[in-house]
Image 1: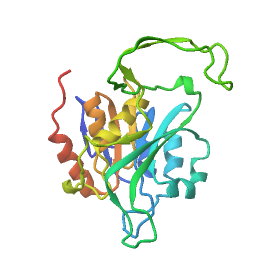
Image 2 (image 1 turned 90 degrees about the vertical axis):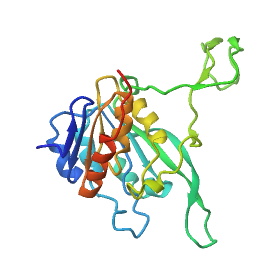
Image 3 (image 1 turned 60 degrees about the vertical axis):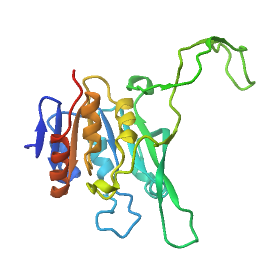
Image 4 (image 1 turned 45 degrees about the horizontal axis):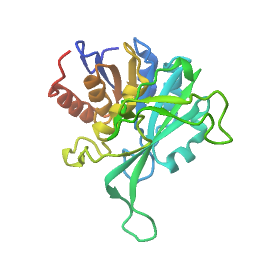
Length: 255
């Protein structure tokens, strides 16, 4: 099987085809997956839930693996059975700068989307790496009471060192990421700043991250900027052409 496009220097590969057919033929096993499937919530031709894609991804990934999947609450509820075999871990809430929704007044304007983190195997065997956020204060060594609340377990650390950073929060306000709709690369393109932390969180050094529905190629660009190898699959050839143009124009940071 020949990639539609690849860059050996950055370790990126793009395949043209249906992920359900391509995944069994991949020459190397990915270790994690970050993807944004069609939600199946509109009348658009492209917005159709691809039955069986999760089964194909499950077979392609190892016994211990992470899966970050964008979607709406409605999508995850309607397709909960498809995630059988996966355990829910955490969620990130992306708050959009501009909302979208029906023109009527009987529903709220939608200004958010979820990214749900699923995993299988032992949590401790998986790679986890969040980019920590800078805070405005550094408190130095902080001492706490041994138990802040009755429900907390004994043996909890009573001191910790504040290094001026904190773990990122689950709600992401993408203030620094402008809208990408004007680029017209894909109908449902995600900002790079939303995807990059998810790729970094689940992909170990030297590992291969998968996006079975590449769309505009954001996962591939995120991987390239992070120095992570990635393989993506896209069934629409025009989208593949746009992805190649996008990645060919990319300036990577010096090693």
